[in-house]
Amino acid sequence: MINPLVFLSNMPAPMLPIVKVAACHAAPVFLDTAATVQKGIQLIGEAAQAGADLVVFPEAWIPGFPLWSALASPTMNHDLFISLAREAIFVDGTEIDQLRAACKQYRIFAQIGFNERSKASLGCLFNATILISDEGVVLNHHRKLVPTFFEKLIWAPGDGAGLRVVETRIGRLGSLICGENGNGLARYSLMAQGEQLHVSHWPPIFPTRPPGEAGNFDLAGATRIRVAAHCFEAKCFGIVCASPLGAARDFLIQRDPSCAPLLEDVPQSSTMFLDPTGSQIGDELEGESEGIAYATFDLNKCIEPKQFHDFVGGYQRLDIFKLTINRTRHEPVVWEEDGRVQHNTVSAGFIPSAPSVA
Image (cartoon, rainbow, N blue to C red; front, side, top):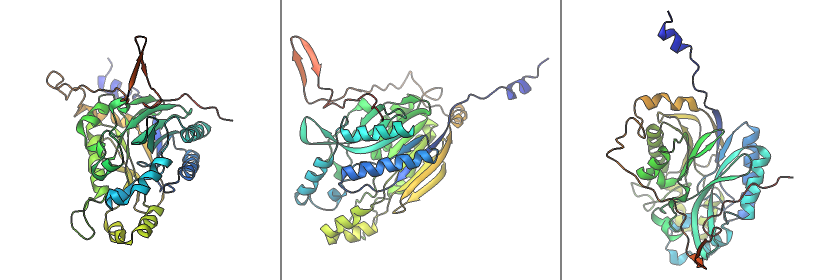
């Protein structure tokens, strides 16, 4: 007679991928898209050569986070908004093509934060992120749902079209940008799609009070709380990718020396990794320590915690709670000609096919 305990202990465990991930705690070449893209390509190659399957970049990394909106009145920053608008990129533009080609060349997935331009408006910008496959294919394109605090002076609100978890050979990937990681409904939308790797993008700092005044926003601490909560609830692994200030610090101080105390005083960001219990694992890079952090995720560890709290399964009351999500890509206009509706897919965030690599 077979002993059931022995039989069960000899059964092979489900084999999910073991994934090496990289997070670039690296500053952009501030307000210089061409140079930032080239830096990104170098970092993609470096992460691939280190054996990473996925490499992640910070929020609005191309060509930089518009920190000036927290430092001075918008009436004083028109030139910087114009510079950012000129350096922002289209989702189907040549800069994205270069990054896609690099991912295909190095056989690595990449999740990249960037300032996105709209073809419908010279001044409409989105805080966006794009997931590129190891074959150079754009798998998802997400626009931040709600710009946070002073970000509203720069970015338009996004839509739900990018609230998608993509199934890949390295697991099921989802992503949110900065404050979205505190939006329980946005997070639940990814949990309900079986998310296993959660990418979150963050800025270098996030000032909320004058220099020297108590209570300025602790970005690293708040980040850890939010992403750890999501990892615990989703039973997934988390990637937190933030940026140093880099050359932006000197640029902003040279422009307005009065902002120096704030830039020196406000808590800085941290790049880190979390497991399905919310515990921190792998490397961590903080503040101005530029580099690439690495961690290894065994996705099989996403299974056991589901026994305790499966918030999209056995620990959820689907008969009581209902969530409906609109994933329509917002467009400024929908054309109707000869009774046929035509959508402007380029201005709405067209996802192009794979590039060719020489």
